[in-house]
Length: 104
Length: 350
View 1 (cartoon, rainbow over the protein chains, first blue to last red):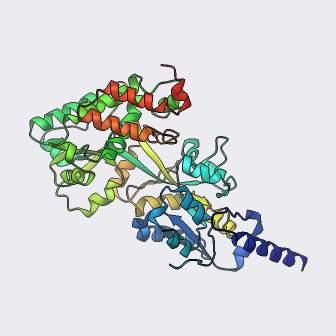
View 2 (tube, each protein chain N blue to C red):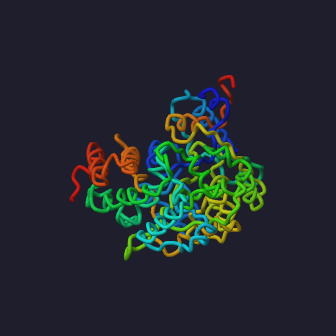
View 3 (cartoon, helix red, strand yellow):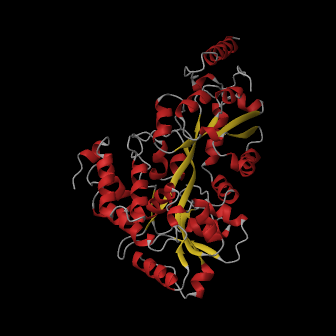
């Protein structure tokens, strides 16, 4: 029970951290996620890129990885605007799993 | 654009440019350290890891995509005019001269798009003239000045070949040059490996291949193997363990083959090069064998201030190609521009 309580506390902390303002870097400690969680549930990882031209080919490449690790899907998510712009990169990297706050 | 970005959620894994941009993101705490990714140290050379590592070799990216520079050529035209692939710079100029005498445009290159003169010409040729990675390092630590014999010789090489560019080359763009080569009107095209994918969509009615830019006689050969993209791990990802499994896979021969075969002309950086199914991609990548590899001359550090060495090289290459500057003047302008902000250039020993 104590362990579960600790995990909940950590998750709440992450939630609070991620809920901070858009321009503040909010970085969760990498140790917060128990690695054993991987074995029991399917996970989708998002791969950011600035090369929309490669969607078809990258999907094939990433499928090769999932053949080896069936519980993990890597989804290719390219946006041309991300090529070199540090402020936008910062913004995007801190937007992890946050609900949309602005209209699309 | 911000609204669009805010509409989605951030990535767990992320493409990383080489050198300064990614280093800044790592220093600011956005990227995870990757020293525990199995296979990263064993399968990549120090040089291949360096663009995504700190000065004390802490890695924060797994090398993913490189592109090469070389000289595409029309094999049929070479055969028709009894020409061999040149092994020295002088031989290349002789080939160009013979083609011109036979009313064939030797090179498709042009200066209408300035960036092509910087990336496709200057940075394609530079490693052979400055002496590859070792030579380039001497500029970065100030033991050479940017207007020395070697840089001047690189600009001279541009002057040498510009004589054999198409008519009205100052007006022609990158796409115009590609078309001159695709239509068989120009025999050679200094460019990058990514053009393979484009050429294969064209119905080219002739055999084509690629050779490495030849060095001056008696000089060792180098090739520009541009370490372009790594993949990093967002420190805020909630799937660190799974993301590291992916990065570990990225160091494998399976991943290297998948990349090289799916995206011909985009090359893996793995030390053990795969044999690629695409014949053109395989010939291009094979040019690495027996040659020293280095990134584009200005990529590391030299674009991190103003004026950027990229712009200075571009301006010089265009001016030399058009007879508006001598090779020495172009090299002097590069040295003077960098001396405004790059400490080693201020204090360099000529």
